[in-house]
Amino acid sequence: MPVSEWEGHDPLPLTLEEFEEVWKAARRQREAAATGVSPGPSSSICRITQPVASTSK
Image (cartoon, rainbow, N blue to C red; front, side):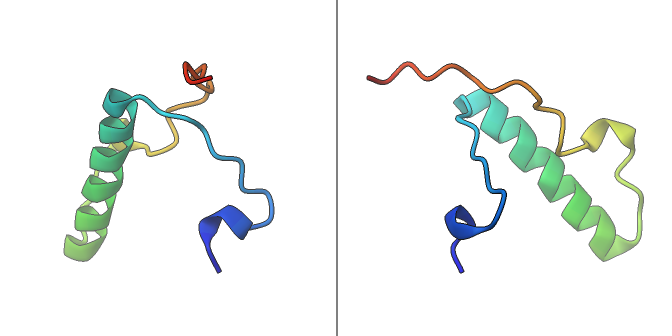
């Protein structure tokens, strides 16, 4: 089932910088899980809390 069809899925538009920050944090967490090392508190993938205003019309 595509993510867009998940119940409660509410996509947030992200700038390139925001996407890269979230992607890097998720990658660190995944790599840490694979090696058994804690990624640390600064790598939370849930840091973006405010939706970004869309500039497309």
